[in-house]
Amino acid sequence: MRRGSQQLNGNAQYTGLWQLIANRDIHGVQEFLVDATALDINAFSPQDQLTPLALACERNLPEIAEELLKNDADRELYSGKNRRTPLYICVEGGFTRCARVLIAHGKQNRSLGQL
Image 1 (cartoon, rainbow, N blue to C red):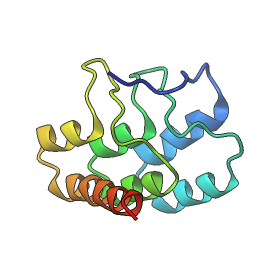
Image 2: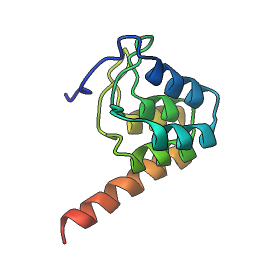
Image 3: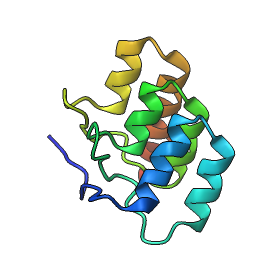
Image 4: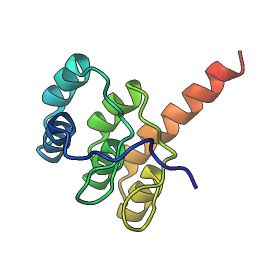
């Protein structure tokens, strides 16, 4: 089982990212990711232990999931109380568009690795 590299410890920067995702603010997420320095995109939220990508998948936000993946979010991390991967969250919720984004990103990365 894999884990993210750190927990949040009340960092306002991370709180902002989670708020943007919870508010479905794709433009805010894009701006935040451009402006963020030393951001651990795979950190866990203190409330529910979800990574930003897991939260985007739990909320069925494929566009935000895509932005997070472009910024090196790990689609294979287990997070949350039930230790689920983002893809598992999508399948469990019936979020096919979001699941397709995760699968497509995985195929793209494998293709690049085989060059």
